[in-house]
Length: 222
Image (cartoon, rainbow, N blue to C red):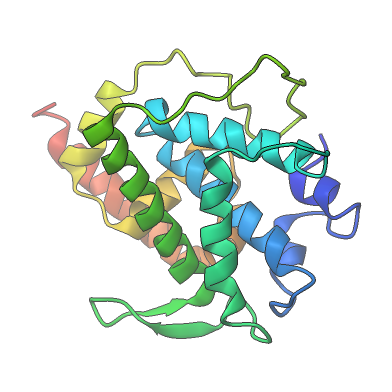
């Protein structure tokens, strides 16, 4: 199955790992931002199918048709633009480099900081939707079949996530633990999780053990 990063780079990158090993530049920042936006939306839509799933589908459609004359991009591409603008301020540096510290004083990479910036933007859209009703629905009247994607965005669109949301809320996981959990839910292997989140296997195993311990402690109450 061809990965989106391979398709949109015209075969230059076999996977996202290869893309993000390069320094951020005017030539690759657009693709980097788009890939981060897609992954962020894949994660968020596990919790909020109503808004995030529409943004995700809209972004997928945008990426394949935005070069067409008179094509109007969806709200989903605003998520990608947020990531692109954030990354571009670090042009010349690699996404794996440390860019600062979070509120807990822990060092974070440019890529992780970008994910958090995108998450905040998506959350603002969700809050806006709550106040003013659902965002504009994507027009599928001129719909072209979605391409193959490592994650099938239609596969479980009728699934009830309320129990999962309740479980995650009860476990009180950190942002990193939620990111790791969702990577595995998306079918990623440990090596892919390492590359995606720029963390080591030891960190992943430690966080998995922490998640498992919290789950076992809460399982009786649930």
